[in-house]
Length: 138
Image (cartoon, rainbow, N blue to C red):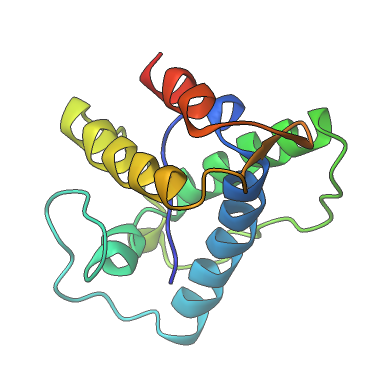
């Protein structure tokens, strides 16, 4: 499973931040292995189509990854990977999320938070789901 959370990295749990850092790298690796573009969803989506949606938005992914790395360094996590954009021009697009895109990912993150109420941390300190819900709704 690969997800790009799109909300401000400062508002993510440590676990979501680290997972997204690694999963964007996985998505880039997938595009390297399978660069052909087909059936790209018109709108941001989760589940089936999520990887395809970002396949031609590698500039966005690189920028997103850099923001995630900056926040990870603020939290004293190690970041040693950098995305190299040596792809065909057709894959190097930027993207700007819409209001509906944020609503979609916020709903998913809230569901995940509520499933493991004692699991998530912020700056390595355990926090309850309500703490994160207030952060992502800001």
